Length: 210
Length: 210
DNA sequence: TAGAAAATTTGTACTCAATACATATACAGG
DNA sequence: CCTGTATATGTATTGAGTACAAATTTTCTA
Image 1 (cartoon, rainbow over the protein chains, first blue to last red):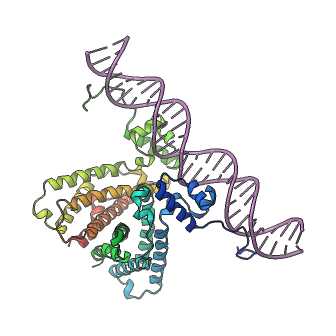
Image 2: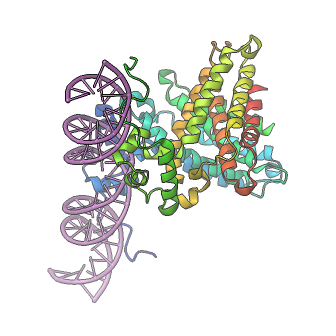
Image 3: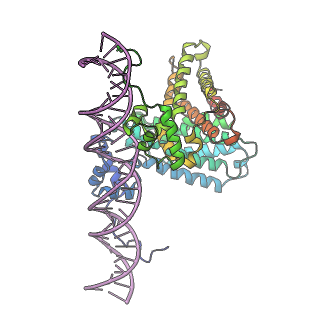
């Protein structure tokens, strides 16, 4: 299904995810999330409402760009851990938990310190809380699926309760989310994202692993 | 603001939450959640679409009746634990964790074994997964708030990291949710809800408490 | 240069959940 | 019968999201 033409054939794009994201952030600060329509965001970015949907699946996706990027990175990190796995790193449930917890910390470490998602930090002003709650669980579920797959690959040691595997995935994702929200809410005293994430997930990792 | 009349003055209700819920369950099984409009649910229950909103805040509330009841029960259970607290039961973070975990188990124990929420168990047929994900996190957040308030009342022992308190609340709610979903998905081999909840939250409670 | 193919944008129409508010209806009580 | 209360219904609207057709902008080839 290769194109017969060069990569630049066809009509050029007039906008980008970043342009739309920036336009949206401005408008949300000016007139709140619910007070801003998709048409307004698109217009400020210089395109039509319909074009918005060529860049984002839904309005709420505007709020989750960095998290979705981090989820892609987690997918990559867990796949990488799987391809470099040793007998020891997959021998026990506890060892697999260590791998997952390390991957979560590493992904958090990759996040640029200066890149703070406004939809989270300015959620009072923007009024984004309800939408974050309506669209957050699907992201958590994606992370959970990645982790469950990682724990279950190769086939989990017999005697490991599948409910405990799922429970671990759910708990560590929720704890990581709590850490991330804490980091986002910290204001000028904000430290490193990875510090907050690690602090939040440590008791989970030890409770299921140790 | 007491009424000047007896409890039965005014126009009698034509429907109830239960009638609407039953009508919805039938229709969702017949034609999926997204294939069923609120008007159709209301009509099958014998009322108009606008009346639906006198009983439920939104379409998705139909899916969460039992969970919302359980959250009310958790609120009650945690308030009760607070009013019967001893010096020992609030002395340490670990003791407070024990109280919370016991309350979660007790609420799960109250759930009638025969009452299995169809929107969860038949989510493939009904196509409810997306809506459950869109409306689940707000329920989890409510549970988290209840737990954080419980852990923080009376004022938490100094030296306890607020992020760890929040992380515990997030992790234990997520684990409990995983247990509940496991129970709902179990089919004919379904055991007790409280067994699955306890199995799922035990490593969380020990990891943050012990 | 014209036409074809590819990629993107825009237009038009629609669905439906949710909101707002007015009007109608069914009851109890005096 | 009238008043007050509680509930049901009607009408209109908004805006996110979907579907599909038409238009536009580019590259490439004969």
